[in-house]
Image 1 (cartoon, rainbow over the protein chains, first blue to last red):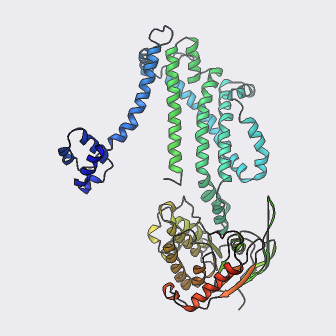
Image 2 (image 1 turned 30 degrees about the horizontal axis):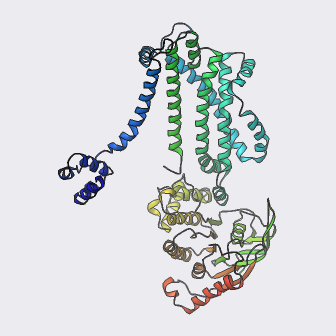
Image 3 (image 1 turned 90 degrees about the horizontal axis):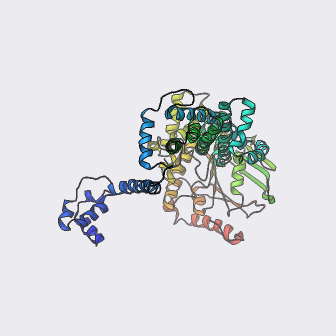
Length: 305
Length: 266
């Protein structure tokens, strides 16, 4: 019935009104209200696609509401697990003053996040500085590939925290040890993806370089680098994800200021509300890192933009 | 007058994982300056291999290739290649793709302004001046192939090597580009070696058609001289008895005498 109305209204409507994608939604709403006059009143101005927006926004909100509802139901009679309401009230308090400092072990959540991000940035930056050039070498030279691939296969699956004692032993301090752990865990995806990217540079492009007799510098800047960039950025994205996963665990063990330490500290204080807040914060920060890098990768992918 | 390109007793054996593959044997071919030669044969007969040898992208396992009396040891800008799949760099605009070639050949002797003019002129030559700022994915397949040709022409090569340049295009676009190519070649007086599997294309464009036997160990079976005056008109030629004769010669070679053992691939 709806479709019938849709067709007849299409026929009578001007071409102008036919164009926008919103037409089916309008027809449906027209059918719901009243039949004939509504079709005439269908706006000629190109409307915003509200239905698509609704489909995009509503389900995620429903999902979140469902989670909170289950949480609330389960904690209704609980004494040691906080309710959503109590947690929210606590979160407002925590975020109202994120940058306070009461000694080394009691600092605002803002400081904790910033310190964690700082460690991730250093460890990840070093990993990129070493891993990406290494990936290029592995991809470009067969010998280096054969030399390193057994080592990479062996070391890559090692749990992040297994590297921590080595860091503590070598650097004799907690902070560099945490950075070292980030470094070693986030380097693999960058090495591997860059190497694969270099190996997959289409032979045609390299033939073009040979026919044009391009200099080695031009080959690197005009052909290799742009061709490898999407692979490299995938590696970078995976690495940042890993780094953010690892920092929380590393900080739990090393202490100091940082979101991971904060979680552990609040566990020792039996402040579960703060732990829940920390989990949410860790998730949000990880998501923001991921989105940022996806946006960068999209900007530099040459095939579909 | 000595030949411009000379292929003397060339052998090509590839060593692959499955063992040795004898691709070409006893290839002897001479191409004169300004001549348009096509290589035709069933797929897998090594015609692209021969073109790559002339381009210098691969080295022969036996025999010698000469261009302008110098041995072909590596690819060089005097032998420009138009690749089968256009091979434009997707992250550069059409202009930048052409400019990359121009830069390499003329940067030592010319000013930046002149280089830009050359790149633009090459695009105009193939009627792609309007798309200079576009990236390859924004233009059609035929347009990409034109830019590929512009890139090759911009280097002012002594020889233009075309590897099935129109193979991936629809019939109408292909016909149009063939006509354009004929006009450009007439204007620039280029020497052209072109690989094709299209009989009509070969007869329409060539001065000589080099017909190759089937692989493995393919060689030149026959060479057909196409004595049709230029400029050639595709519509008029259809009813020309000489055209029909040349066409039949090629078809006869390909299908009667050297019919492919397997099904003929397109």
